[in-house]
Image 1 (cartoon, one colour):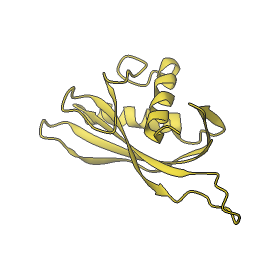
Image 2 (cartoon, helix red, strand yellow; image 1 turned 60 degrees about the vertical axis):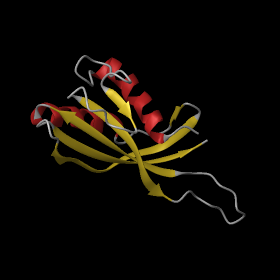
Image 3 (tube, one colour; image 1 turned 180 degrees about the horizontal axis):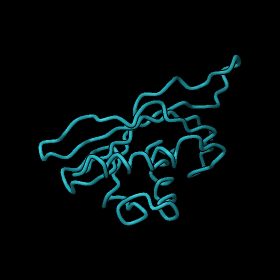
Length: 139
């Protein structure tokens, strides 16, 4: 299975085509959307990190099924209000999704567990806002 961050990036890229997420509509991986590590530039970015989730399901006979990973989405922006609006759009795009298959993995539940919230201000005066998402998925 893919990293959950990769699959969620694909969801956001697809959602941007129709919902206007991002500065110019669809986000572009490596331009304004990043995985696993926040770059120093550009100022306005969305970065998705894999974070610890819950243990995978283990049945009585040792069979496995569902996984319960989590991710953190970080929006960095020169403007607090613009960053806040973007992270709200991302939350609204993801929260409550269910029954979708991405890259061969079935996502049965996507839930915003906390946020949006201000994380901090970087050395260049950009705000960094975070959103935490819990996922339930299986092959």
